[in-house]
Image (cartoon, rainbow, N blue to C red):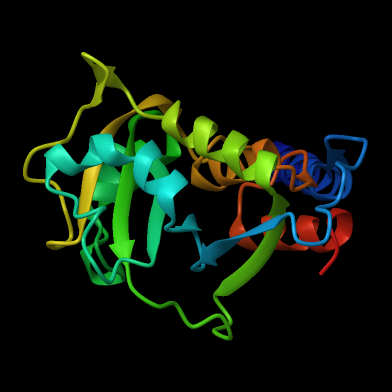
Length: 224
């Protein structure tokens, strides 16, 4: 028992050090160029206690980039759609856990080990920018285009069309798609979000597996 407690303390200590370093060490090390006046684009970071999404304001560039989601039934071009919201995650937990009340042992086990990944895309109307779970981030025109390209590259495609997962959705305004990469708790949804933000020129911490760590790292390296 004594050896077990020592091993546990050692493991927790290593994890704590990794979390501190992962949040405090910026990625990339050198800051990106700031958006020039009149040259900026805004994106939204949406968070809950364990997961983050990226919301892109819909304009002609976004509609054109994600028009290939329309055949899956996602109303990208429908009037009143202000945002496309993207999230990456583990297939079992993401699809089967629509609310806290839906949590089951097997999806949790798969999330803690290794699972196939999925992309979740939803359309949204106006989003309250003052809500505490919403963070407004600025990027350049070129940075947002790189972010769009990185998000597109996250989809698995067949004949250049994203592969929709039939019957998997939370409602009429969202769809799940096959995604690239394997999911686990240490390289999970918030790591993907951070990578997409960095593609857009937003500096984050090196390893931020929780939304709170990602948010803190942006405060440290990008500015509030």
